[in-house]
Image 1 (cartoon, rainbow over the protein chains, first blue to last red):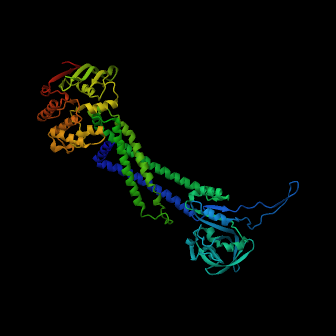
Image 2 (image 1 turned 120 degrees about the vertical axis):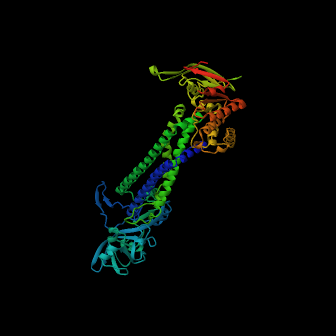
Image 3 (image 1 turned 135 degrees about the horizontal axis):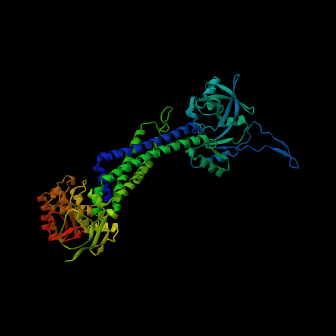
Length: 401
Length: 225
């Protein structure tokens, strides 16, 4: 084996220009593979961070209670209480659930919330808004509120409201001004504008307001519990599994973000499939390149193969010599391509620094190990047929050439 | 003398039907251990085919071949490869060295391929053989850069590397000038004398044949003299 490896190395170094070209070809293929992995992975990351990054990955909603009914002795429905506009269903034991959910592996942050509809009044101006009550200190647990603040602060103290820039512009508001927020149940609170955010999402910037959880309790007349618990994960792809785990652990109806996001998932899958195709073609190119080079080498070295066979080299030895050449070309080309790919991606913005207009290449998703492994395996595969052909060379005919 | 090799009724036919060419037509031959024999005959008489069959590189169409009490017709490829490596050395007309290897690497190839690596012992023996061939200044020289006579001497050293019982030489001096040819024959004669290695040398050159103690003449696929 060692001696076959020596002969393989000698054959490769004997034709330096040809070997360099072959290794360059493999390296280019690996470079493309890595570039595509980084691009497809980065693109998926970019799309997900833009669409899902600021939303809850798993949400626990209070289940709406069945309407109260009046039934006579014969089982006929006599009357039913129509559900009111005020949300009454709550997660009463949220104080118990939150620490339990926080302890689930992969959970990054948990945000108990009270949500509802309301009207924001400033003088004669009224705007319909979606109200979200957050626990002070957890303002940026799900949406990176602090990161989007353009004026004031994201801190939700008592009697403080934070709202979007579009809404602030519509009502001509600035930080420090006082305004009145009325819930859909008719309860009002006078609040001070503590901060203005801009996420770039129309709905959020134009009709969402954030208040503290105690303020929301007053507004929506919920003395205890919350209406929903939002959960952020370390890996948003683990949402389905984590939701199942939370359901099993708490019995609550935990819903992953992927529910209702089928179109986004299909788009990401289609994108991933495109990536697989491109990477497969890069690998096929490598395999064809290595195979054709070794077929030529086998043909050129037929007399030498004949001599080796005459001197007592077995067929297996000849196979190892040529397969080792393929493996060495794959390994050197693979490592070279991977290093070049890494170096080319190094100066580009990292995964957390993607900006609109730049190519979202994620250096951490270059699949370097996979690229090298697949290249070596592909090169070995490509060398098997030429190696077998070499082993079948008839020494008498080959020496006579 | 002890019988080293015994070939009986060797037939070799290439092609089939009307296109069949009968190169050997029932040739029988015995070689004794320590012999130095010349194989003579006109071109196309079957000398090279006979050497190829005796060297286990090709099987006869029919007939028997035994060497060192082993049936070489019935043996499979792997067994023949090992037998060839241990017991038979080859010297070809066109030296047939591995061009990307040095003189020493060529010489030790038969041992290295058997051992799976180049051992220090093999390298020492290879050096000794090359020194004996008068190539001490060419030991680590690329074989492609050696002269014709030097290449053929390296080929002789390679044939002797595994101390084979039999060395088959097919026109070993055919491509050499007279001085180089005689030098190679001197070496072969010395080794035959010193080590008792059996040589069967195919040649057209009567002066080369005259240096062998036995002449075997082949004609029309049979031993004729």
